[in-house]
Image 1 (cartoon, rainbow, N blue to C red):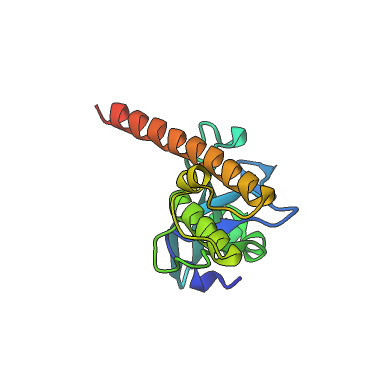
Image 2: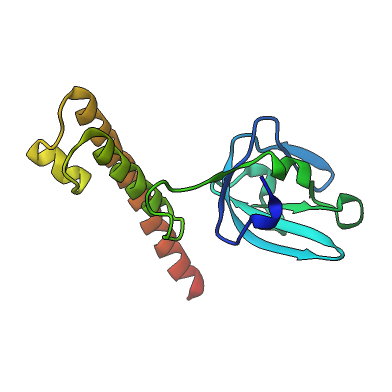
Length: 169
C-alpha cells in the first residue's frame, strides 16, 4: 500500500504479525481494523494516526486515544514503523465508492452486493425476510445474520451517541 495515497477517513485492516509501539513495549494489532484520523507528509518525515475500531486494553490512558501512531522516522519521532502500515490493506466499498466510509454504509454495500449476485429485488434486509425475497435457505440465513449484525451496530451507535451527548454536557 502506498502511504502517500492515504486520506483521512480511509479504512485499514492490519496484516498478520503487526505490532504497534506503545511507550516502550510492542502490542499485537494483527488483523485489527481502524480509520485514518490524522496524517501529514513533510520534509521532516511522515506520520499517520490510525484509530482502532475496538478499544485496545494496552492503549487505556494513552495520550493518543486508542490510535496507533506511525512515523517514517521512528528514531527521532517515536511511534510505530511505516513497514507495518505498508503491509496493511485498505478496506474499500465495492458499490458505494463515492460515500464516506462508515459501518452502516459498508453494510449497505454488502447487502447491495448480495442482491446483485443473487438476482434479488433490492430492499431492506428485514423486509426481504418478511416478504420472502430469497431463493433458498442459504439466502434466508444470510439475511437473518445480516439483520442481527445490523441491530448490534445500530445499538452500539445509539449508545455512542448518547455517551457523546452526555460527555458534552
